[in-house]
Image 1 (cartoon, one colour):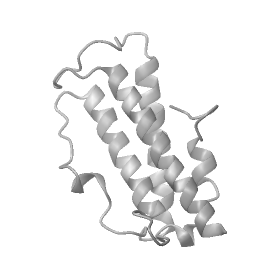
Image 2 (cartoon, helix red, strand yellow):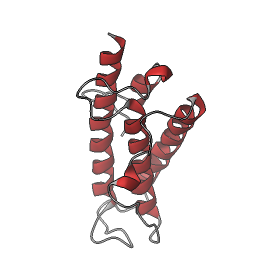
Image 3 (cartoon, rainbow, N blue to C red):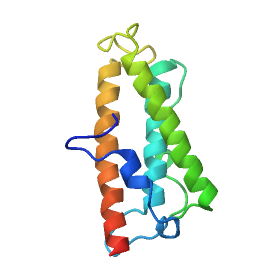
Length: 142
C-alpha cells in the first residue's frame, strides 16, 4: 500500500510535481496529472468507504471517478487532494492492519468482496496510476 521495492511511492511522485504542469497533457497522453491524482483519490475513497460502511453508495461509473477539469482550479485544490489521499490511505492501511478485521470475510453490503480483495485492488490501482503520473512528470520536465 505504501509503495517500495518494485513500486514507486506516492510521496516520490507528488512531492515535487510542478503545479503549473498539473493540467498539462503531452501529445498522446490520455490524462493530466490532476485527473490521475483526483481519480486515485476518488477511487481510494470509494474503496475505503465501501470497506467500512455497508450503506456507502459508490459514484456512477465512469464519470463519478474522474474530475470534471483537466487542471486543478488552483494550488490549494492540488494540495488538498494530496492531503486527503494521504489521510485516507492511512485510514485504509489501519483498517487492513486492524487485528479485529477478517481479511477473508465478505464485506457487509457487498456482493462477496473481501477486505483483502479491496486492499489488492487499491494497491494495484495506485501502482498503475502513480506510474502514469511519474511518466508525465518525466515527459513534462524533459
